[in-house]
Length: 308
Image (tube, rainbow, N blue to C red; front, top):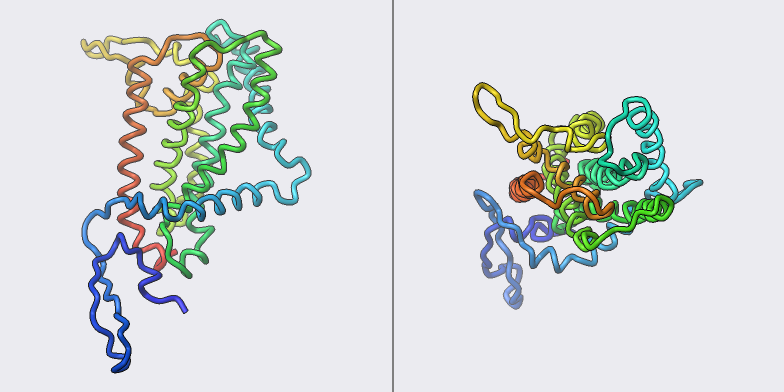
C-alpha cells in the first residue's frame, strides 16, 4: 500500500519525526509531513537518484512512437524531407527566397532539423503529464522526469534525420568547417528551450486541458516567425522608427529559435556570420525561460496528483 510519505515529494514538504504509538515494543517512527510554502528549489540530487527511471521512460517513449508502424524510424526523415520539398518548390523556386548562396534544399533542410525536433519535443512534453496520470497518482518520483524524458526521446529522431543531411552534404559537395564542434552546444540549446517551454505548458495542461489544442497552432505560427524558410539576413540590421535607430536583427533574437536555427546553419554549412548579438539574445532568452519554467513547474508539482 502506498503511504502518504511516498506520494508527497520530500523536497516540497517540511517534515519531522514523532514516536509511534502503535505498540509498546515498536520502535518505529511516523513521518509527519506538512506542505512547504513559497517557491520550491530544484533538487538535482534527487533527480540524479532517479536517472534510471528517466532512462526507462525515455526508452518507453521511443518504443511507443515506432511500435506497430510500417515505416518505423523512417518517419523521422519523411517529415522534414517532405517539408523541405514543399519549401523548395514554393519558397525557393517560385518566391525566389535567397538562401545565403547555398542550394535552397540543403539550406532549408538544415533549418528544419532543429525546428522539427523542437516542435516534436514541445508537443510530447506538453502532453506528458496528462498521459502519465496513472503513474503520477500511484507512486512518488520527481515529476520533472516525465517531460524531460519526452524531450530526450526526440533526440533519436534528430540523429536519424541528421543522416539525410550528411548525404545531402556529400551530394552538394559541402564540407563543414571547424564550426561543427559547436553543434552539440546548439543541440543542447534547442533541448533547453523545448524543455523549458514544455515544463511550463505541461504544468498548465494538468489544470487546463485545452492547452494541448493550442500546440499545433503555436508551433505552426512560431515556425513562420523563425528563419526556417527564409534567412535572418532578410531582417534589416537596424531601422529608424520614430526617430530612434532600432536594432531590428538583434531584437529578432528575442525569438529564441532564431539563434538555434542560424547557429545550425553556421555550424553545418560552414557559411554565414559567427554567433553575434542576435544569437546571444536568443541564448539569454532561452536561459531565462528555462529557469522561470523550472521554478513554476516545481511550485505546481505538489498539486499534480490531485487534479491530473
